[in-house]
Length: 254
Image (cartoon, rainbow, N blue to C red; front, side, top):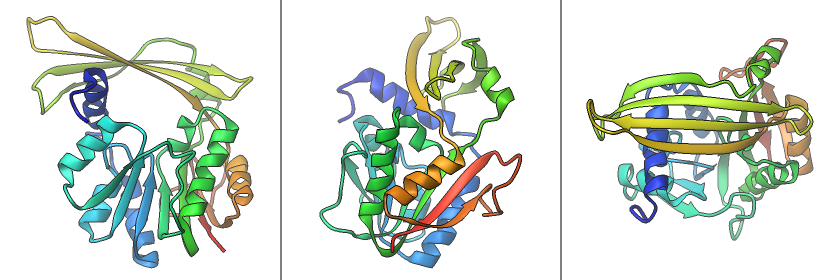
């Protein structure tokens, strides 16, 4: 798969660079839930495997679903034989039968579904994959008014980092535009990478994100036939409350 689309390969590599300084606070939650449910485990929108890799390392059978072949190629390169990968649109993918004890839609992946019907389909995919008693987990960000006010298309420097794979210096700038009428954010990321004294390469990624709140997340889970066990405000599963920056939903298939 790799090499067919240089832009896709570059953006998958740079996605890993984006995560290079990620704290991974959510991984402890998934490992704890996996210890409760056992495997097999499913992650939808798995990307390059930030979540599935530690689960596989812990000994669980894991399936990673993503529609981006370049992302899955990088996952396979780092976890050969330890993770089953499926190239598919997570809104239409369904297993042949309910198989999984834990199904994850992690770290804002739900926002990548740019319409409510697509987001509902993603939650339905989670629910359809679970055996009775299996758990679904969805993790979303809850931006406040100040966050949204900054989404006015201004260019902001995100980071300057050295890519360990290429040795190039990567400068990432971002711009976002919030549309209150549709609850969407048009997010543009501009990566420029190069060695000192050489022309820089530029890669651009654009995504339309649909923001939702905690209440809508609960409604989507209920519509998919899931029973909410916990709606938390952090990865320690403390109750959601005023000022919570995230909503973590843990729901059970009856």
